[in-house]
Length: 432
Ligand SMILES: Nc1ncnc2c1ncn2[C@@H]1O[C@H](COP(=O)(O)OP(=O)(O)OP(=O)(O)O)[C@@H](O)[C@H]1O
Ligand SMILES: [Mg+2]
Image (cartoon, rainbow, N blue to C red; front, side, top):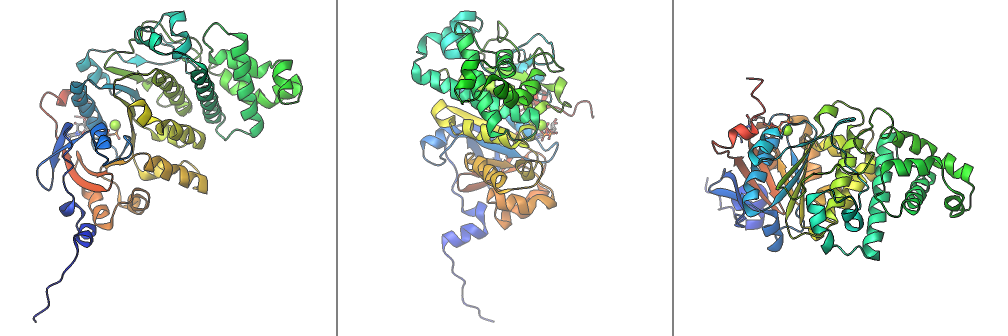
């Protein structure tokens, strides 16, 4: 047979052989490992954003258990620190201790009635000087004017957080009446405590005992408003006097060094708790408050085991709105998940869940996909825009090797660890 030569455009070829046709990223940044199709792979979201390769700096990492997701994150943060970047890590399993040791910092271990309290409603702009508590906030307070725009932003941030937190505690979306009650309660708490930081107990008090003035704002009476906010108030009260007290129910503890290159919030004592999602939301609320203080430092915010919060629709919504601010705040958010179905919160996949999942994904232009089971491939193709050629590779990827989707480009990367980095990432010690 004498067949004619088959001609295709480079675009067609790129679809069939995505890795062969991808030009390298060539962005500098930190070394990640070996590009399995040749050369080294380096990555820096801030550089790539500057070059217009990606339009946001957020990253989502997927991978089955034990495939090297956290190891990648740890060594990545370690390498990024060379460039003066700061990292804040939410660690629900307590596995960043070794990294903390390398860095010479002490993780903030959060547990009921423990030594550390964080105030998710903290206003770092206006009141940082009042407690004089935090090294960095006291230092940066002067640069934050606390004007009316900043105050509005503060109120908006707190009310959004209370709605997400309330919904996580009640395990359902808030009713319109509860949304209104939480907003009025926050306003009341502010009015009654003009010269100090507002805390969750202040909001609980206002929810359970609203004033005539609050009720008048929505043309109702005190009894009716108290009724509207009662379920929410009682659930949030768990953080104040119940089984979850002593973590988020007062001003933040003194002496937390917020200027440290690495801040780890360790929630491992509560890993099995049903309230893990709500507690992670409180921690993220506090980190968000910190971000409202302008800073020239580029930061990474890592949410390991992020499935714990993404299974709640209101928290996902809240998280997405804070991820949208990443560019203006000089932040790269990193969420670590097991499967793409983690994004499809618990329960049925209604249209809002679909749009939230795809919204969060389009706000994360870097996706790193470690090995996925066969049963997840269809989901992965649909949600992550992975081609059939790429999807076929996923079940067979070895530990530490991931498919990187950066903007429109794909890479197969073997994450490499230096000998000095091994002790910092080894979570298998006890198993061995
Ligand atoms: N790039 C790598 N090269 C060699 N070994 C690795 C690599 N990445 C991880 N490992 C080994 O695999 C172990 C598990 O890795 P890691 O804890 O990062 O998995 P994980 O994906 O975060 O798991 P989980 O889903 O349980 O949190 C590590 O303790 C380490 O020994
Ligand atoms: Mg892990």
